[in-house]
Amino acid sequence: MHEFKYKNTQLYCENVLVGKLAKTFGTPLYVYSYHTLIGHYLKLKAAFSQINPLICYSVKANSNLSILKALITNGAGLDIVSGGELFRALKVGCPAKRIVYASVGKTEAEISTAIAKGILFFNVESLPELRSIDRIAGSLGKITRVAIRINPDVEVKTHKFITTGKITNKFGIDLNNAYKILLLRAKFKNVKICGLHIHIGSQITESAPFVSGIKKVSAFIKKLELKGIRLEYLNIGGGLGIIYDNETPQTAQVYADEIIPLLKSTGLKIIMEPGRFIAGNAGILITKVLYIKNTPKKKFIIVDAGMNDLIRPALYGAYHNILPLRKISKSEKADVVGPICESGDFLAKERMVANVKEGDYLAVMSTGAYGFSMSSNYNSRLRAAEVMVSEDKVQVIRKRETYADLIRNEFAK
Ligand code: LLP
Image (tube, rainbow, N blue to C red; front, side, top):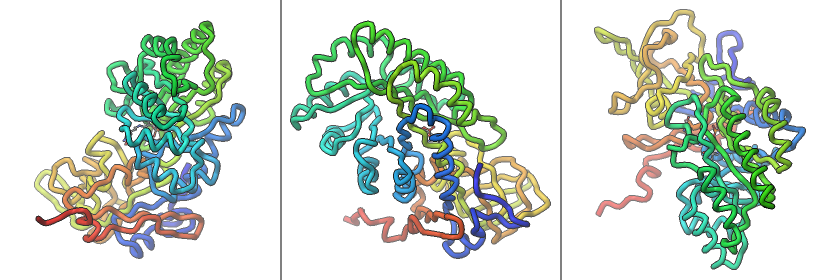
């Protein structure tokens, strides 16, 4: 479900002609649909209404302040992984009690700020980190809450860089060690272990691994109860897959129907951390065709967006559909490539692409999650502008960078 559709031959975002946005704001340009973004959040909320979880949107997927604000205004909490994300969350007025904080490498400064601000809890990823949080909370004279991130050791069919729930991944704590920590919990005087957390990976298109992970954790919760250890929260992470190409991911409702009975039986309050499911299909990247280059072997469509704007194809071999802003009946096999000096700088390879000509625009679809948030200034390229569309209203939510921005923190000594 998304609000990017052709009307006659032209691509619209909600009620706005995307071609007009490209001309007004220039390219590369990220365009977001407010109603697609909020629609996905509400869809998940409705599917889980029986158990009313706290939905903590995963800030890393798209951390623009306006995106965060739109979601928290609609009742979402936030899942953060750094001091920078905490700063953003507080900047847009997210109540601290709706913030959960994961990451295998939280620094002392990050931990103490999060404690001082009173976040709901940390998702703790190792014993040394737990000791650190305990010590820092003690020095601040506070008792802080944590959930233990369990590594449930489940197999997930997704790109190997985005699977996180196998025992060979750096994330979480295995069940045996988690059990030992929980038995010794009285040793950590300034920490209250209030829950468990799992997050097994991203772009997961079937419910089976989620079910398997939650079953393992539910059995663990029962085992703890037998020892008199009663928790309050179960954080089931994010990871729900979306449609980029011809995937058939589970719908929010199917996912909910499968796991709600398991979640209910734990008796715990549920937290979820979706990122891609909410933001992925709510954004597109608009790019302009600079040159068409025909070589003896290939046709290259050279565009003004590169791997610095969207790194997913280069990093994960990810597929993003590429559509012309004005429908063209003929298409041809081509590579769509950016201007960066690397052969890995491509948006599509050997793909049937509309027969565009120089000066035409293309939309790289489903780039609302892990698009701008993973962009960089490589090749001293300015990061793109971002606009949000709601019905016929358009707002710039990030200005295009300038050359002054590029060297802001540098010195020529
Ligand atoms: N919770 C935790 C602890 C996470 O590490 C992540 C994502 C999420 C929630 C949100 O996952 P989602 O619902 O978006 O799948 N850059 C990669 C994705 C990396 C995901 C990292 N962790 C990509 O572009 O595919």
